[in-house]
Length: 90
Length: 334
Image (cartoon, rainbow over all chains, first blue to last red; front, side):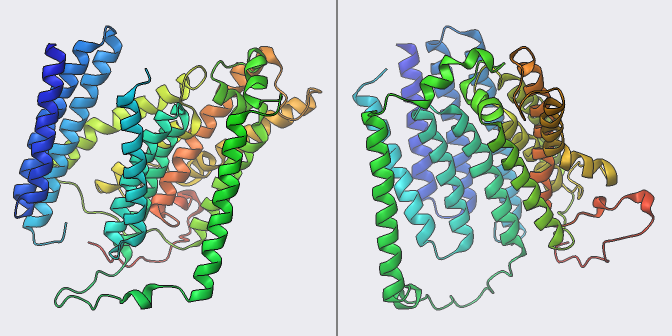
């Protein structure tokens, strides 16, 4: 029940992030929408899935995936924004 | 585990896969095409996972999407950028189309190939013949030295194929080395990227070792592990290390040759011992497979990393030889 609610909330954040990516005017706003909403969305999804599994190893792997995506998307957003700010085509 | 939700997921995957393939082919901008191709590879990995082929899914994600994507992006980087300013005149559809006869011939060829594949698929599903290879593999897996049937086929029952695959990779490397000096390097990374690389690279090396080890009884193996090691090398190079973390001189040559050399060496040693070429004695098979796969992992990692470097690296020359084979390089990309 709680797991289902968490997953549904995660999907909502993904939806919001995707709409932001499609609708927002420039690259900074899009990055903002995409990275923040999706990181939180993935976190909620992972939290829901961790509750659904009985296996500690699977739960730890899920959390590890979330942490890796967090680090990669934060660094990626930083790099893309830095490129764009220097006036280069990202 | 089957249900309407999974059917929906499968349908969605098929639609997205076909859509991405179409968008990749139709893309006018090569960079957009490459990014779409990477997305296509990732969705294809999901499709393989849904088809219960996790070994192929891993290989597709690591090599098909990851490393091929990195190679394509590195190749595009050397292309001159389209000059900014007025939008270049879009090619008219007539210009882009092949001449009538060629496109008809290609269309017929694709149709014929599609029919053959569809027939093979239906035939496999119908399962007419009593001799199914999967059954034979599972019946004799106890003699293979490993419990993962994919590894048993790749390294034991069909070891020749894998040896020749490694030889193909080595031949490709020789071609890359013959292309000339390496591609231009990358600027040293800022603190954020350097910090991320400092986290990721040890994790990648551990993951590579894990995939190599686990390949004996679960999805994984030398190709996936080697691709992960190569990914670590790609990150090293992207953060400013021109040598991509590879060793220099003789060590680099030994590393590139290790896969084929150890594979062949084991096969020949078995011949000397009076067994068929690559006919592992069951008691030794597990150990021999691990030895071969370890060498193959290192070689695949080194060869794929050298492919990303895209030419003969400065480190290829043996420093002790005292002569520079590489001419002075021109740096296009500061």
